Image (tube, rainbow, N blue to C red):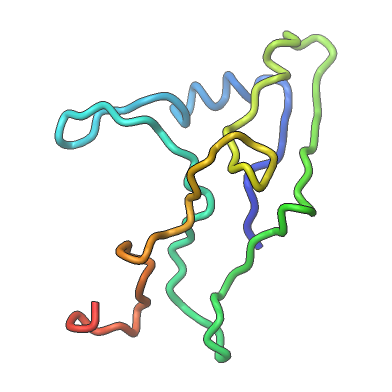
Length: 115
């Protein structure tokens, strides 16, 4: 089961910045791009015998944040969190669900001709 990252803890912002998980980057063509949270795009092309995906998503109604803050931490750092889709309580309007013309529109059993 997949869901957005839900831990909020002291120093999360410093860890995210050190890992370069947010902000911008320059792509291979030299264009500045925003880093986008694509947690919902799962690259698992296998399916169950009933032809359903091999994974599920946590229903938004069951999503909640888990907090752990050290009393000595900077209170501003405790407020940081990743951006989330609207259905999970965030502000991102654009869905990270794959579109029909993406690689996710077929699976490993699809021939090159069918693709």
